[in-house]
Length: 251
Image (spheres, rainbow, N blue to C red):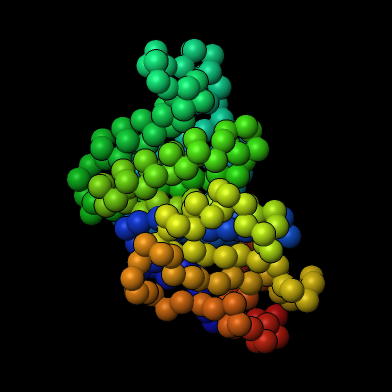
């Protein structure tokens, strides 16, 4: 039986980009990274910057993996949308060269910075998840504003020896949007979650690939090409992974 993500990838210092599609959402991977870090790394911090998912669903999914995040002091949930609304209501920044939207996103950066720098000096590795950046673009933030936020958060995570994970919803796989192109240039690794090209299957929910980003010169972890994509099936208890063409073995 295959598994994903590998523990070393879940603690990689740098930016890991996860892209998914409407027919193959990557919720299971977000929770997979989160569960792996909270269970296997007993001292690292996990910050979940959620744009569109509420804490109750996070708790419900985590409980299926016997993980009680409500009583886990190393887990921090940040409701991005609420903080942006509060910043807008407060009137933003007094800096003359800062737009109101830039100052709203700056508030998110400051929250992450405070959390990372106030964390106990344990194993030194935290996990920061931004889920998801596409919704911020749909809310009206420009590619330039979001690019600045991603660059700033990536630099902060590198400085603090943290793993930075971004999920980005892709609407058209055949034509990359400007934000996708920018994120792909920043990432160390790209996890591509996609539906089956042959259409839906009762035995297979989708497949994933692992690509090397331009930031890394050579892979530290085995890559997964599209021709040898790792397939998965979603169950009530989580995701089951298997090599292409072997789904019958997990039914």
